[in-house]
Amino acid sequence: MRIRPFRNSDPPALVQLWRRLPPLPMRAQNISVGILEEHIFAKPYFDRLGFLVAESDSGEISGFVHAAFGVDAECCHLDKTIGVVALFVPPDGGHHDLLAAELLERAEDYLRDHGARSLIAGGVSPHHPFYLGLYGGSLLPGIVASDAWTIDRFLAAGYVRTGERPIQRRQLSDFRPPVDRELIRVRRSHQVVSGEAPVAQRWCDACTLGLLHRRRFELRERGLGDIAASLDLWDMGPWAVSWGLNAMGVCRWSDCSGPHGTLCHLFLLGEAMKMLHSEGVSVLEVQPDPDRPQQMEVCRRLGFQTIDRGIVLTKELASGEQARADSQEPNSDSKERAE
Image 1 (cartoon, rainbow, N blue to C red):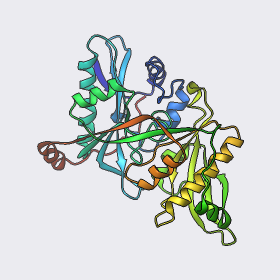
Image 2 (tube, rainbow, N blue to C red):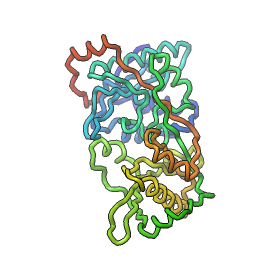
Image 3 (cartoon, rainbow, N blue to C red):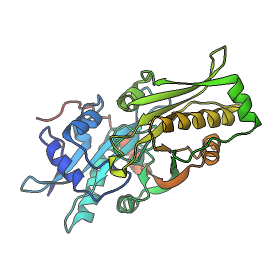
Image 4 (cartoon, rainbow, N blue to C red):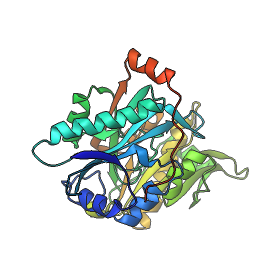
């Protein structure tokens, strides 16, 4: 068994390997070469040297790991101090634990050599360079709790739990928006406008969210037309086929601070859910940020239920490894794929 970088001839074998994985509700099952090309290999920052496959002497691919990078605070450039083990498909066979550990180690070596100082398992939005829409639901929440084997492999490699992201859903068939005096005031002074989400303005958003079929809901002041709050949702239909659901997911909340921020998003999301149900959508998924109490409160009041959790696993490079990374000049990006 050997570990080597990606080749152009690999995608058909990678698709077959992916499809043989045990069913996991939070992972798309019926992928194709075209889907992998669009969501992974065609991205401008894809580096074949960070996509490592385990290959037997007979040429069969039995597992792979994909190392990438997070983004800066403005979401405009890659931040190579933040390493992301974007996907880890463990190998089969009697020695899979040993080979899995070697794959992870090689991925970490790649990230370290390019300047990474901290590592994230699976990616946590907005550090989602790849696989948004293929794993984790409406956003990337780390490694989902139901993916226990993968979590154990990262823990064995020295990663530690540093947080959790709730994955919540709400059936729309029995949804009734809350009614109180404050919400009635919002209804009188505002209106909800729906349309296609605009083109992503930030480069990293264009590379990730730009691939999704998105829709925007805006809460606008009547007469003035000023936007008080907005939400971006995306059609999860292609990936939710295995759930037997017509689903949409929230992929972006506007920043809406102030005393009326929770009220605005509560009214906006409630009205969006009514509209979606009238159009045949059966389920809405959200992943509220635990560090933003406003989002958590809105989801609680609208009756969302937690169906899984994303486990945030991170690893800080030891001081000796950091010093070695600092002393090395990062390798130039390799955007060319081997033939």
